[in-house]
Length: 396
Image 1 (cartoon, helix red, strand yellow):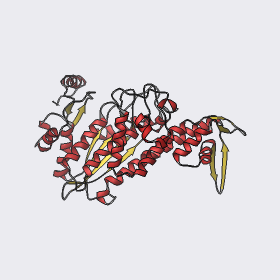
Image 2 (image 1 turned 45 degrees about the vertical axis):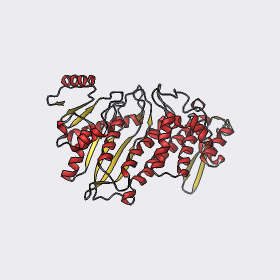
Image 3 (image 1 turned 60 degrees about the vertical axis):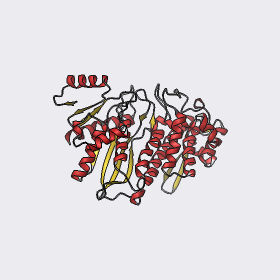
Image 4 (image 1 turned 180 degrees about the vertical axis):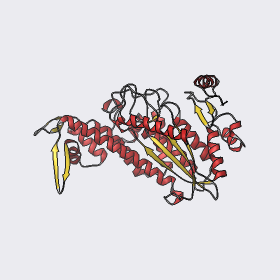
């Protein structure tokens, strides 16, 4: 269905009628509106990919995310210009899933000489484990934005490389979550029975044992953390992460949970002491860092003035804030490193860098709109980014 006469009434009526028939896509001019069906629909098989790949006019076919992908690919070939697909909307609208389908189409149509198309699909389990979480509206909400750029060799029209740029990871979620929400998936994956037995060096226990997890429900209906953890480890292997890198990734994530269990008592000189030294020892062991240096990081504020270093003790309240700040910083750096390390594998065919002469298809999957009772600064940034992107799209 292609709407030529657009009004609120005709748009909503058309979407409602099509949705009742499991027709979740609707064109409004060149814009594809997708309505989340919240169930599996058989419309993303290789037969559908081939149908839209070979179509002379994708607009003549049923509206589909593959149609948008095919149109971008056709323009890439015919106009020899880079193409961009913008995916935006409210949280839970289906942006992450549709981004996956764009990648699936590109990986199926654009072959490479190095098996790059398979690696392109393997980055999703990594990003979802460390960057997605359950929110009120969505059980698998991306809490960050990403730009995925797939480079194409214009001479051979084959996939030559890819890269991911991440934006605005919601690091505040590491330390606190809203009602009926969860922390990032990776923490629950690491506390499944299989992960606990397979990785004893992480010193983990069930979710209720950790300050950063125990305030919300650990389980989500329809989401198998054990299965997703296996997908994550398979993806890390496919993306050429070494065994040492894999262990260090899990150690850092587990160390964040142990760090969050540090509690403080009042100490001398308006300072603080750690209540349970065993918790500190466990965190230091998992992080593979010096115990005393870790203690100092959360109990003292360090300032450098010229050549002089001043260390000021923190009271228990400020020590808690320092602990949470450190946990958010560590997790944020881990996520950025995962993206950077994945890019090394995705760009290997280009010798580690992208040739400016190459064409590309880019997909921008921006974090979704959310309107909470209290919007944190990160969410306000996300909402503003969505508004600005939509304005840019409307005037382009």
